Amino acid sequence: MSVPAISVIIPAFNASACLAQTIATVQAQSCTNWEALIIDDGSTDGTVNLVRELQAKDSRLRLLSVPNKGVSAARNLGVAETHSPLIAFLDADDLWHPDKLRVHLELHVCHAECGVSFAQVAFLSPEGKPNGQVASHPRHALGPADFLSENPTTTTSNWVLRREVFAAVGGFVEDMRYSEDLEWLLRAASYGSWRIIPIDRVLTYYRTSTAGLSSNPRNMEEGWLRLISEARGYAPLLVESHFASARAVQLRYLARRCLRLQANPAVAADFLLRALRSDWRVLVREPRRTGLTALAVLASLLMHACGGWIPAPLRLLP
Image 1 (tube, helix red, strand yellow):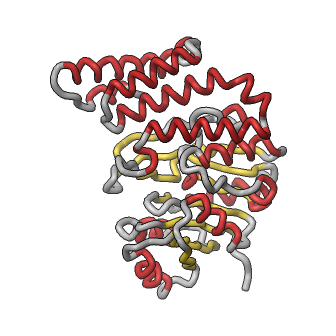
Image 2 (cartoon, rainbow, N blue to C red):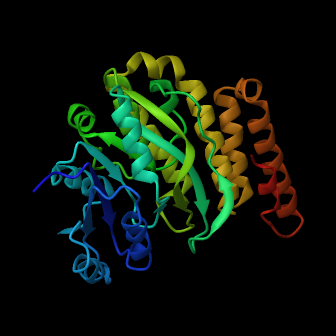
């Protein structure tokens, strides 16, 4: 039996509500030379039965059930259980454009130096409907410094990477619950001569949620500090020279995250003030993004003080 061009790794934990829609976007790909391995990470709902029903109709779908160890362990296991030269990750609640795999495959075929590719990401509501927002997207190949603060690729569902890169740099740190994707990218960018190349087209759709891991900004901050701790082991000079500015950007991002989650605006204000204390020059380097964040935080504080917070200031955020 021939090896597919791309292996799609889908970790799934109690994902029966959205997994069928996610898998359907894989089955609808214009590139049909793929396999998809769904890692059931100890689900207690109908995830397993759902996948088995879909398997009966499509032999390209595989299921592996394991005790719950978290998304990083599931992704690592998925890579180990597949053999395609290219790997794509897809979270169980995200969606793909029909040309997703074809466009990435063509890029990797034409550019042997490309180790990781990523596209633009559009956001979906928790119900899976487009909300009109598209994540900011770099126009240039990325280097180690690009992964010290925010994740310019947005989500692992946006990646396609060469298996040899994963084998060389190692898998995800399995006891990291936050920033594990950013840490992996930083490690990959620091390791060798592969390029991390953007695709200027929306190919991934990211479902927002107020109940997932990214709904707790305090824990996200702790995860970022763990990332820095890991990075000191393989990129100490990079961390030393960029820590203050990277922390400022990360804290600004968490301030914005608080506003999007409609959290207490005092928490957002705390993140923003600490960002400016870490490196006030972020206001000079990125005046629009930092200034609009500050304005949105101030407006939210005023609304909250006047008797009720509403999400109107989010319209100020780029």
